[in-house]
Length: 214
Image: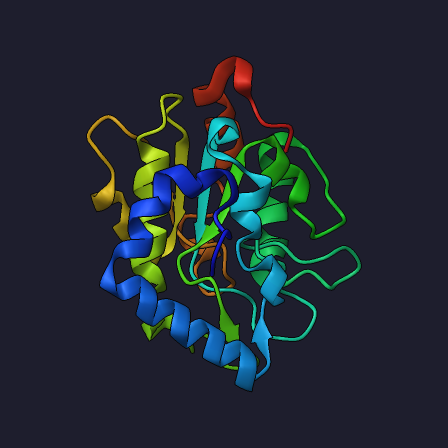
C-alpha cells in the first residue's frame, strides 16, 4: 500500500514502520488477489485523496464498506451516482431534509468529501457478500491513527459519530474535541435517536463561516 496516503502521508508515515502495518498490507493484497473485494483497489484510500488534512473540517465515521457489487467507492456511506441508495444513506438523506430542507437524489457524497468532510470507514476493505470480513486485518489501528491525526489538526474538525461502534471512538479524542454523538442511521436504530438529531445544522453551527454545503 505504498504512496496511498496522499496528503496525509506526513501525518501517517510512522504507521508504515509498525509491525501491524506489514501484516495489514499483506492481508489486503492477498485478499484483492484471491477474491472479489470492495471498494476497487484504486479507491481504497479515496477518502484521504478527496479530503486532505488542510481541508478537513468534519469527520464522519463509518464501520466498513458496502459489500455488494457496484456500491463501495472508498467513502463511508457513499455510493456511485445511479446506484440505489442503501437503507442507511436513505435515512441520512431523510434527516438532512428534515434538518436543513435539502433534498439529494444521488448517493455520491464526493462533493461533501471535496468540501472537507472526511468520510472514513474504520475498516477500509471487505469481501463481496461478507460484511466485516476484513475487520480482523488490523485496519482499525490505521483508522485510529487517521482519527488521531485529524483530531490534532489546527482547525479542530467536528467528529460525527453515529451508533455504538463509532461512538466508542470518542474515547480516542483529546479533551476539547468537537464531537456529535447519536444513534446510527440504519433502519434498526434510526428511530432511537438518529432522526431528529440535526447533525448537519449542528456541524455548521460549530463551523461558522466554514459551514458545509450539504
